[in-house]
Image (cartoon, rainbow, N blue to C red):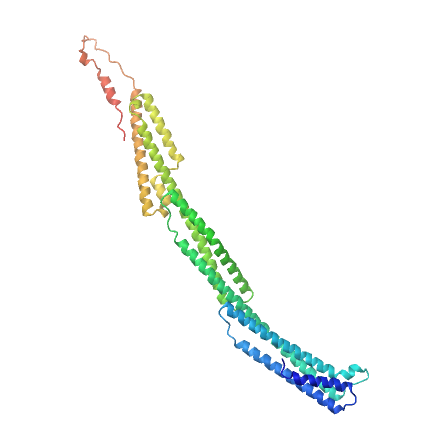
Length: 405
């Protein structure tokens, strides 16, 4: 409340009373009018000093570093501002009442005119009201800037608090991602790792979306000419960098696990193919391959089986290492070498078996040439123990089946 209100109101009431009673002297009326004007002038001066003091306090106020203190400071300053605005409105109302009181004779009678003293009083009150209006406009301009700064400070503290929370979640996410170094040593293990990687990706959606949203909010603060642009922009850049790093590392890990899965599937196929090949070779009985038909059947079985190597997309050692060199750990490389060596060994077994079977088939189809006796020599009766032709013995030696391997 204004300090001079108690003295101002009686003066105004006295003016109204004197205006209504013509019997009172002009001297008394002039006294009360001057007193009311002096009281109003004091009110204007006091109000201006209050606004000046409040403005100085606001200018010297340090901005808090956390959300709660900033909210409390903003609420406190708003409360003081509203009280001062009420004081200003009251002062303006008092000035308007005083001005009406001075002009009362003219408003009551069209023929009445204000005296020189009354005209001077009107000018004085109007000047004081103009000062009050100017003071209010200056205060409103100052408050507008100060209030904007407080609001921006609160926006900044909220942004910083959200940044700390999001950054902590992103750091934990990146730490978990960095722990995904295992690329698996079997198909089942790689498939399990892929599921775990998918779970991490799903878990990271929420903090990543919060980070992107917070970065967009930071951009909006910058576009609105926030006073702390130099503090906000680096944080937006960091949030987007972490999101990009997570996305890039996720793609890299998926690529590596995909390669690892393909590698182990090929190794499994190669191992299964080798086992099936060994079983096929072992199942070819020696006695059945002694005939041309048996040898040709065995060759056909081998050729059909070797054609399945293309269906299983089996690579040779050079192609294999070129394709998977980037993910070959010492353990995986050792396992791959064993499988590839086994593949070469089985292929060599097939090559040897094919050579043997082709020789058998070729010798079974070669005709036996008859030997005519010499005309100048008479045939002699051979003993029973020497009736076996030499060519037959040689043929049996030739069809001896190559040993299994």
